Amino acid sequence: MTFDITIIRPEMRLADIKLRGKNLPPGRLAKIKKGLRAFHTLETMAVNIYKFQIRKNESELGRQLIAAMANEVTHLQDFQVKLFEYRFKPSKLRVAYWLVGFIFGFFSRLLGKKAILKTGIWVETKAVHHYQVLLETIDWDEETRLVILKDQADEDGHVKRWKTFLEDIP
Image 1: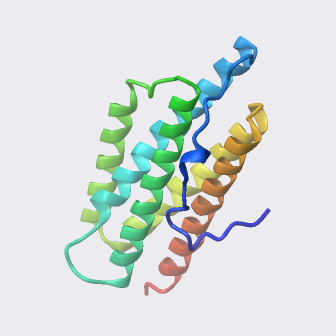
Image 2 (image 1 turned 30 degrees about the vertical axis):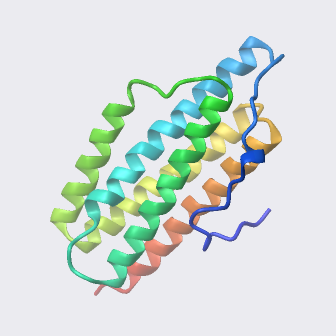
């Protein structure tokens, strides 16, 4: 399945919001909860990494970091919506991931463009892998699965974009 990763914020309509999980076995619901919380906390971290990598100066890299941050905010919202559709709450530990995102973003910005790009490649590569593991190990409903696949495609697109930028740095 292919997704248009140039769409940063896919359209969502009222009819797309559904109450999910009724009549599902408790074991399946527990796995879905754990997976959605993992996605939500990791996207919290990703938003902060990009937010704190963005510099004041105008550049194409800066523009792309803003776009990546906006895309990650969309992913964060995707998983927050899914958590509430299943009547779950986000993890209280997400505050720690917010802090980790700040640390990775702020310190990679201090170290320069190469560090920003290498951090992005490393984090997004981990995300693509983590998405794949959770896709394979949890029995998702089809609509949630499609959201996860689209978000995974976005993460893979970020890896490719940052690798291209890194190749252009002498």
